[in-house]
Image 1 (spheres, rainbow, N blue to C red):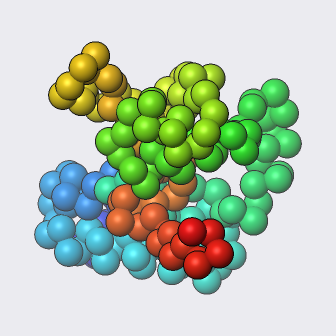
Image 2: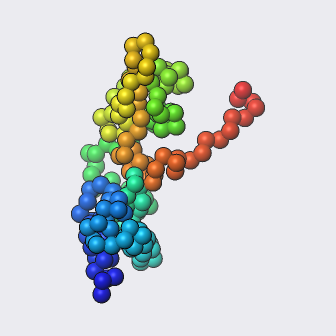
Image 3: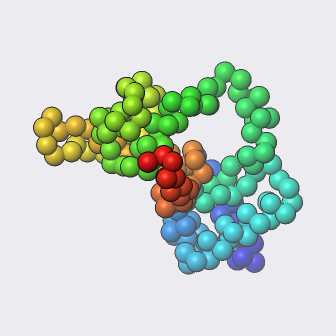
Length: 174
């Protein structure tokens, strides 16, 4: 009986929270061990996947969250036609530099990209994907940029170590 109640509690927590819920917090609220909370999340994920539901349990940004299946994105986006969701290629390139090089200054990003990035930085900050994470020591004490927890959520990443590995530069590129 407790197992079924535990599943229902976990499901309710994931449904009610707009943010990923850490397993530690699920365990604390549901009166479970953290391992049991993780196992229940995995069981729910498998159940939803096996029953071909329109949603899934994903582990992102240090917690668990309910999300729509990626293959159904076009249908969900039709529900919100005025919502701008896409990032331009230039903004994505800037975001990639920040994600892989963080903490990084605007000047360092511009040196890598070879273009001004003021607009891209503004867009990324406005969308909550990056933030000011401090200041570099030295002349002018430039702002250091890094990704946010929302970046992990937006990209569907468990943590920064989940970023794909970059390919090694080829001999031709050197």
